[in-house]
Amino acid sequence: FLSLTLLLFGTGFWMADVMGDSVVAEKAKLEPANARGSTQSSCYSYRFFGLMVAAPFSTALYSWLGPYYVIALLAALPLSILPLVYMMGEVQYGEVAST
Image 1 (cartoon, one colour):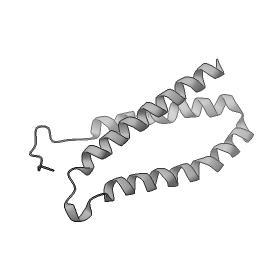
Image 2: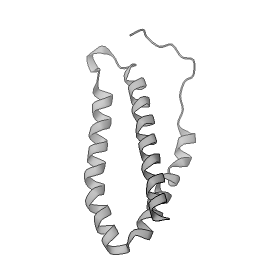
Image 3: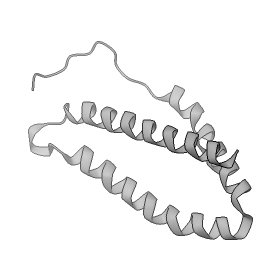
Image 4: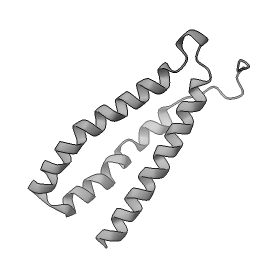
């Protein structure tokens, strides 16, 4: 059960990473020429910071609570931000400058 759970978590994390990268790449196309690349570099630096904070925290949490609670937490936290997805807005069929 644990192996299957970790496989599904890793697959989901990989798919979310690819989808997030594609959204950032599409939004970066809308940046003005003098700020080109700032959206992508900001996103990658935030991701790196999050990983650097999460690595020692998750190691301590794993040692303290054990694998069952860590896996449950990894399943619950992404679901907790699901309502925020519906609050995001985007202009559909808007004008996009040629690149």
